[in-house]
Image (cartoon, rainbow, N blue to C red; front, side, top):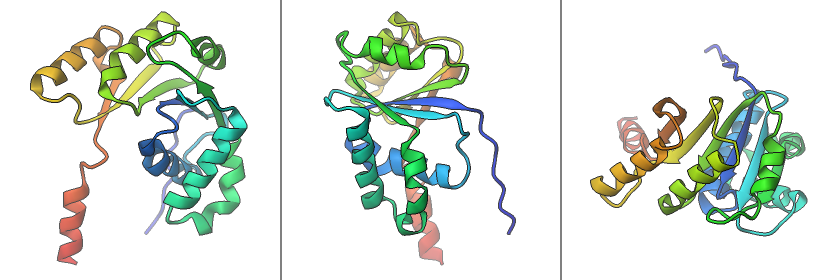
Length: 193
């Protein structure tokens, strides 16, 4: 079997909820695996953003611990961890207020990379985050947002969330993902084996 590395354009990824359970268990270990596979350009950055007050060093240590705990291949890849951690930054931010937004804007200023904003937070904060991104000039043509599905309590609230996001981003800029999407299929394949 021939392995191919699919080239990825340089990017900046901001993870809102960057200290939360989903980020620690799934997102950050997954990004580390992509880094180890050579799918993260040298200039790409990952910026954690959350309410928790900490500095970049504290965030990197939290990510180091999360990857060691939740990455099954860690023993084979730990020699690459320091290089991965060098790409990380952190901003303490208030999704509903103004605190931290100037610092995030400063980190993102002058970037010619694709900017992706991962909303790893409660759907009740999606509108606030989208509004703040626009207010601070970070919702532009090269911006993308990533939201977890399913979101909303029912069809009506899901439609309302979609409408709110559409106020700030074009449909082509909104990525809806479901990290459980393939779970049942994979389990069925394992049963067939």
